[in-house]
Image 1: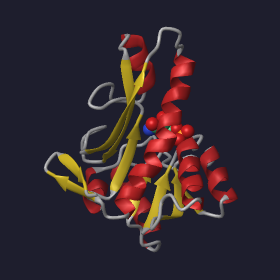
Image 2: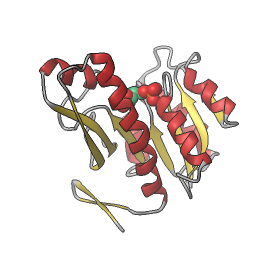
Image 3: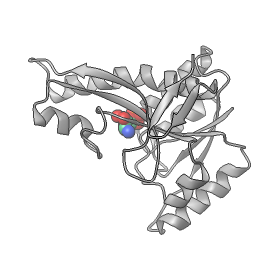
Image 4: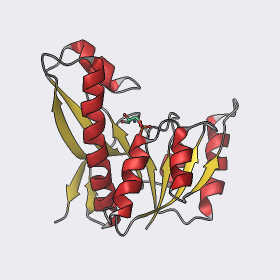
Length: 200
Ligand code: GRF
């Protein structure tokens, strides 16, 4: 079960996946490639340190379809079974999503369908909700939509600042994402309409 992780930034979720794999926590999944659209992404350093192959594919104003074709041709020879988006700051074309239908996962730092978009944590904090959380979902052609695999609540407490909330959210992400990836790798996820059933 070959996994490609796509990341644009710090890569703490990638790190959580790398650490999980080292402890058998993604089995039978194996991260074979890390793709980034940013040459300076720290995620690339994390991958290299773990001995994982990396590809930097920069967009430089390239149209989305063209960029995605390039990515697809780069990952083809790695026989990728699953794509894990971990802070990848690009929207995938519908062609790409169709090509890897039901084989792309994303993590979002809020309880979808609430607080979609790039500032899920801040938006929830500023909205004054009492509970936010983390969502792992299959990617479809809509932004931050797609069948939900796992969700976990994170309460926003009185003394929380945006920073403390971010820390809490990330801690949950780092636990939830490897769990979801392992379930996929074990073939335990079944999409039924809009929902995901987890086989025991
Ligand atoms: C995470 O908060 C994730 O939910 C969102 O992007 C962030 C990536 O963080 N999609 P990192 O690069 O994994 O540290």
